[in-house]
Image (cartoon, rainbow, N blue to C red; front, side, top):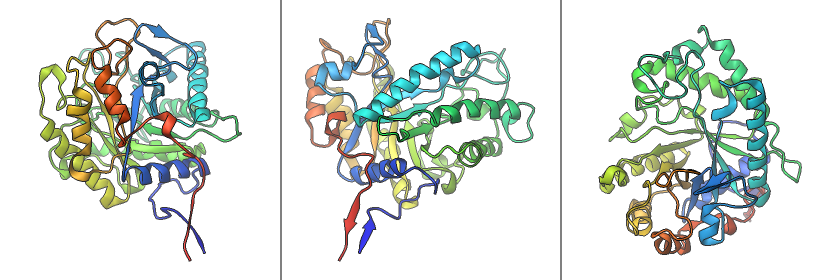
Length: 366
C-alpha cells in the first residue's frame, strides 16, 4: 500500500493546499538532518541597492539566494489605499518569484496600530492598547476584519507559473513578550492576546478561505522554561510552528550568552517534537557582523547543539542606506570567508539545494 510520508503531522488547516501540506512535510522531514538559511527582505533590497532582478546579497556572496526569504505585511494598513495597492503589487511579485524558483517565503507583520498613531512601536504618549479593541466585540474589531481581508486577498493572489498558490509561513504578533510593540505583553492581557490570535486564524482560514498559510508563534527570548514560553500560547489547534526571536544571547551590544540561547532553542525544539509541530529560529543576527567568525563559531555551533530539530534560521535585513545596519554579508565584508564555510557545511541548506519542496511525496510500504 502507499501512504503519505509524515501523514501524522499536526497541521491546523485541514483544507490547506497540497503545496502547503507538502511544504509542512518537507520542513518537518528536513529538520531532522538540516536547517534552512533565511534572510529578511533578501531579494527586495540589500546593502546599497534595491529592486534589482534576481539579486540578493547572499547570492552575490555564495551564488545562491537564501532558502527562506523574509517579507513583511507592514504596508498593508495605515496608509492611503493607492500606497497599499502599490505595496501589495510589489510584494506579490516577490513572493511569486520566490515560489517559482522553488524557494520559501516567511511573513512578518509589523502591523501599524489600528486604533492610534505611533505605527507598530509602542509610544507611551500616543499608542492605544489595541489588542483589547480589535478582539471580537471590541470597538475596532470591524476595522481589524477589514485589514485581514487585505491580507486574505493577497494570500489568494500569489499564484505561481504552475497555477498554484505560493504557501507562506505567516508569523503575526511576533516578539509579543516584550514591550516595544503595541501588541506586547505590558499592553494587553493574556486572554485578549489569545482571543485575537485565535480569531485571526479563524477568520483567515474559515471565513476568508485562506489555505496557504503555516501559522507561527514566535516570542522573543524572555523565557527560561517551557511554562514561560507557552504563557500566551493559543493552543495546539491554532499553531503550526513554534519559534523564537533572539538577538540578545547571540552578541547584541557585544554581549554573548550562547549557552542560554541554546537552552531556549531546545525548549522550542522539544515542545515542537512533543506537540508534533514545526520549530524554527525565526529571527536572529549580529548587526554589522563585527565578529568575522560568528557564522561558524557562534551560530552554527548553537544550531548543531543538543540535536535540535529546527526548520530554518533567519537573520534580519540589510538596509539600503545605512552603513552599519545589516545582518548578512555582502561582497567584500570581513565575514565572507566564514559565511562561505557556513554555506558549504552539509547541515545548512540554501535555495539552490532545495528540491521538490512543493511536490507530494509518497512512502512505499509493503
